[in-house]
Structure formats: structure tokens, C-alpha cells
Image 1 (tube, rainbow, N blue to C red):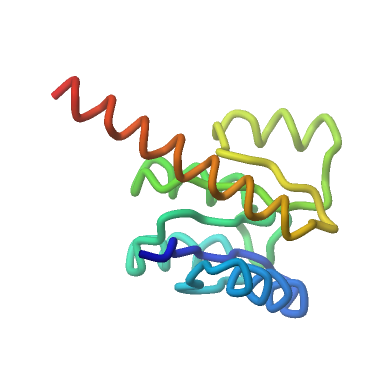
Image 2 (image 1 turned 135 degrees about the vertical axis):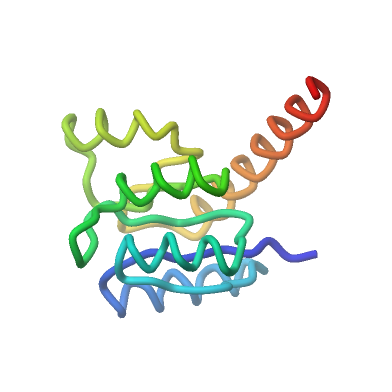
Amino acid sequence: SKVNVLVVEDESIVSKDIQHSLKKLGYNVVGASATGEKAIELAGSEQPDIVLMDIMLKGDMNGIEAAEVIKSKYSIPVIFLTAYADESTLSKAKITQPYGYILKPFKEIDLHTTIEMAIYKHGKELEVVKERE
């Protein structure tokens, strides 16, 4: 079955570009959002396998804050896809323990490898949780 991806990106051209790349790579795009608030809502309603999250978003909430909520509420892995690689952004993003950090402009191969690694890692972590129960 296809991997379901939620795209969180506030620039519509970039968002469409990401969605196009994902579809080309064989992923299923279950939703797209320009704000952190809407991203959290969609994560709950669509239950994607993974979230691709820009850090700078429209609205009051940035991608790091949205990722934190999605992680704690729904345990859905988040990959940051951003143009920012400065130390202060990185140190804030690290705290949310993202499953990947892709820099823009991205290459399709980066999307593919990062998503595959993240899905695998998340699956393994779920197995460990089950074994402990």
C-alpha cells in the first residue's frame, strides 16, 4: 500500500511542486496545509504516515511548534523541509526529534530516501513499544 503524506508548506507553488514530486515517487498526498494549525487538524483527521513540514509558515504557529504537537498528540513522524539551516533554527528543530531534515531546494532522491528511512525507523520504534507492552 502507498505511503500517505501530509504536506505543510505556505508557498502554494512550492507546495504543488512537493506534491507533484511525491506523486511521481509513488506516494499518496492526503492533504496540504499552509498553517501549523491546519496541519495539526489534518494530521488528526487524515492520519498520514508521515508529515513533510516547512519551518516558516503562515499564521501564529511555526513548523517546529506544529511538529511538536503532531508528535505528542498523534505520534506521526515529521520530516522538516526547509530553506533554513542556521544554528538557531537547527537547535530548535532538533528538540522535536524530527525523522529527517531536508534542505530546499530539494532533490527528489532526497525526498525518497528520507521518507523511506523515516517510515522504517518509525515502524521499528512501534515494534519496540509493542514488545514492551
